[in-house]
Length: 242
Image 1 (cartoon, rainbow, N blue to C red):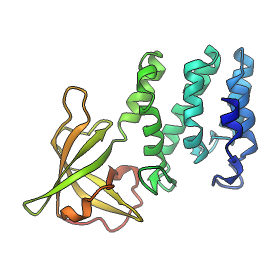
Image 2: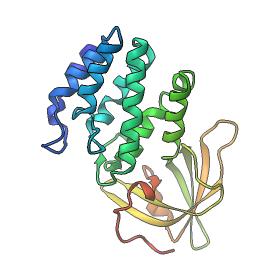
Image 3: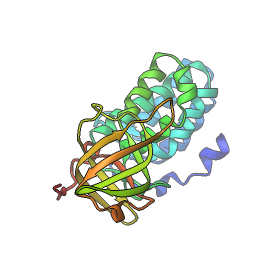
């Protein structure tokens, strides 16, 4: 893990100059990964929470938190109990802070400008198996992450004045069949949508689902289209009317 920490150029990641301190990240992560007691874990956590991954005084999270999330999750899985608790706390704070920071977006393998809360949530969901078994804190982190759903379109067909999109749903769709606002991501473009309705929900633990999207042409949903909750990007302007 130490090699993975050192392999990242933390200084190349964006962040506000007066609050993001990339020098804290590698030092803090190395200290947390090798901590053998409460004091060492607390000291490492202070580095990471005071300008490394988040800035707890301002309630701000930095893109470095998304890059560091797999490392923190590895510490949750393999670290000293005190380090595990500190890593879980940092992940929880990052997700909470990110929910209130719609201006920050990060590039991922599935979309170019993902709201930072959704990117963090995807990292957390990827570790659902051992987080669910790691106690109440792990369960709460998973529950928070699942509120940031993601829908990957695999195929779309015309339906009425819009389209049906078939694909995979990760996370928890709000309110059953209730219409929600979404943000549609295509390569080089993100567009707000006023209505997205869960037409066919996942069953038996499988992610397969379909959405009904009034006012959207099937061509606009060609893979690799991805949808996220619009509430995670409230600054998006010009929402399309159905």
